[in-house]
Length: 225
Ligand code: 5RP
Image (cartoon, rainbow, N blue to C red; front, side):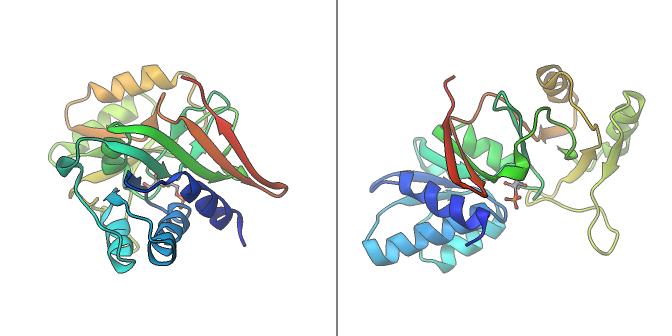
């Protein structure tokens, strides 16, 4: 079993009967969704899933997981999702799979957020992994210019055929190649105040529990906020 599968299966243990569960996106969250599907089938687990991308929606439907949209539930009990980087003060970046907008909407409407990662995602400082910013296509070249002027080293995310990638909400992703994010909160505030920026991949003060797959086994860290 690989590390992503290990943490995916471990995280599904926190899902209890009757819960509304935010289902994350990516190659690690994939294993959590599979395990929840297995528990529904084999153990009779009853949950309602709220997906964070079209890809996860397709997977969940294929497994027979009952789904509602975020607007059809009062709140989400628990969301389980992957992350691109987690710093030693448990701030994170997400959006490597371009699903950051729905992921943040679901996460911020959840009572609890669990992140599942392999040990390679645990870092001292955020920033080595490019930080995704979702922008509305109209005016995106202007935002790009502004990011360049502010030394944020932007690049549009492209598809394999060289076109600008479109997210599930038909927006573009601009990746910021920063190497090291010295002040995540300041950068988040700057991005939050740029017209045309829909959302960014800085997920600050969000996670309550991190489940890490290591070569010595699974390590779970409770994060007190
Ligand atoms: C998608 C995400 C993913 O959760 C993140 O990129 C981690 O993915 P993976 O588990 O495949 O490494 O934020 O937008």
